[in-house]
Length: 172
Image 1: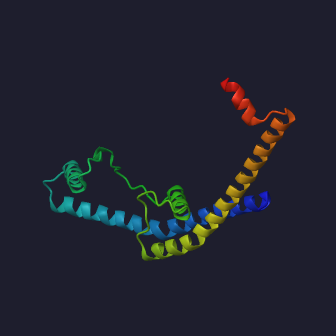
Image 2: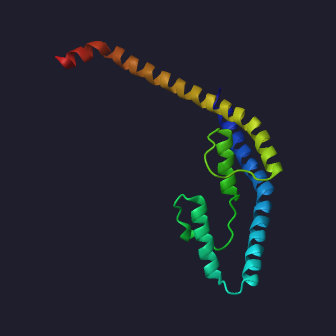
Image 3: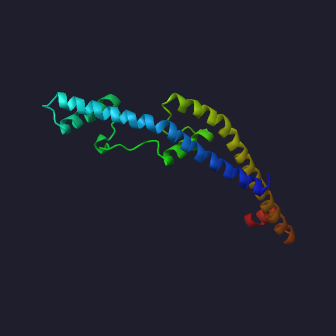
């Protein structure tokens, strides 16, 4: 594979990642924000119906409950007070990268039916595309390594020294 073809394939994979990140963000972010709004409504409803509970007491209760439910010793004191989407462009780009490289690392996954369906279709195209890119990079690296070995061999031939003889003399 020529260098220009490899570079074009790399740009195609990068464009595919950006496109996937934007689609995942579009599909998943609205459901995530509506779930957060429902959570806020539930919290406000609970606090208004139980006037003896302060907001700080409620937060402490939630932190202790989460700690007991997960049982994993997480530091829950750093829970954000305001909403921050897990499906921002950078996180979605990282998620797309884990899909096409088949790493599967992370705790982010699509929750909507459309997001899950798109994830399968995205992987069906992205995994082979990344495999072709990886094969091309491996081919170029192999070519460069063969050329480097050939240059080293010619250096030994110019000096008229056999590498095995040089090793034998160093042991004497």
